[in-house]
Length: 207
Image 1 (cartoon, helix red, strand yellow):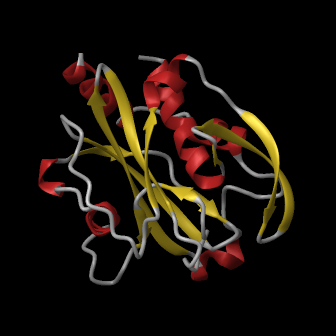
Image 2 (cartoon, rainbow, N blue to C red; image 1 turned 180 degrees about the horizontal axis):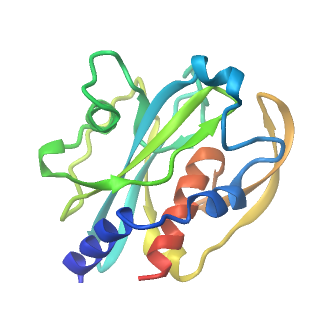
């Protein structure tokens, strides 16, 4: 089953992705998915690692809760990742580096399957590149407390079978917003993380 899912996901990464429609479903109001022409020169690249692994006949991905001291998106739930630095050979290598630094995973045991749909984060000026990766078993996580307050193992299988989306009002950097989110263990997963999950859940639902 696991190898079949991995093969399906790898093939899906080479096909037409549902990106825009799934992103729009979870996009906060008043935000957009693409940068404007005059913003192109100032757009910065960031990448995240969407790591999938099987555990007890279910598929999971690893999310982190960011400390409230972080400059960007403090306290939010996100995928391991960050800014693509000059020393990074590629956005993919940046995602792997950040995942190793944040949650201490052995990247040599990970296979990158491809890239999910990228999008623009207007609030911070980043273009987000989500890389989908696979490992055959649950990693041994070692959290970096400077960058990660909590590790969250999100059950992709459960949400692919029964996608639960709620709405709530949140006080954000730009004011009060009514946003759609994924509820999990009392947490609110919204914004960019929810947009990435939305695309991945849609892909898994078609398997």
